Picture 1 (cartoon, one colour):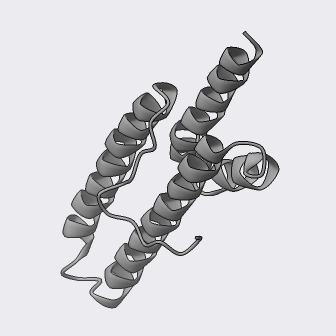
Picture 2 (cartoon, rainbow, N blue to C red):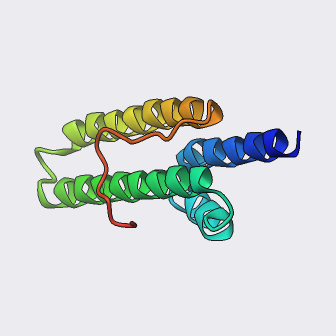
Length: 117
């Protein structure tokens, strides 16, 4: 029973690292990864993946902001669409990661810079 409970708790933490990234960006995955990575390989893998993905999303928003500033007269309408697209993809893939982690699976985002390894 103890292994089942700890496994369920690890799955919950792994899932939270994905879903909390929507609201907190890279902060929650970073905290979960730093505090629990040595205790469980499942949490380590999923939190690291969520952290890398949230860093990638942040860089995409930064690039979108720079392009909006540089191409002020052409880009603003497209920038809104790009921002909404980035958020939609972030929410969808984080939700898929949350579901996979809760099942005890390791989730890999289709697009993410693997900065933290």
